Length: 150
Image 1 (cartoon, rainbow, N blue to C red):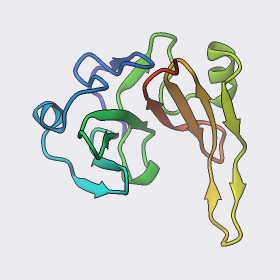
Image 2 (cartoon, one colour):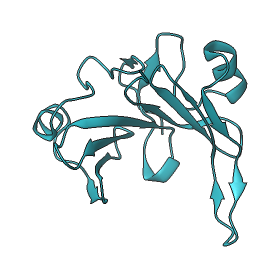
Image 3 (cartoon, rainbow, N blue to C red):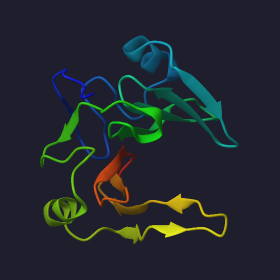
């Protein structure tokens, strides 16, 4: 089921109007509410908001927002994120469209299956602060906003 809320505008390297990279966990919780799931890793904390189609990644040291993941409907238990970039890209955009509008990525990798049979998405990453992970159908499963490279 598609989310019918108006789409937020995403700016690579910055975030959205209400979700800016560098915000504190307190600020994000005030904007989005309590997360559905919170996971702590060695150097990051991730909060998942399944109904919104958003994951928020924080630095474990200072608890500031370092990445925003926006999901395609049904990916990793999320609903469709209502998000679009200034060049019209969002979760679900076909890979050829991403490459045509953003150009050659700074980094990329093809999809692959590991020795245990787990499939890993192909991805492209741009120095402007945006990345995409693609599903088997070559459409963006995840769109990530992160700090732009210096």
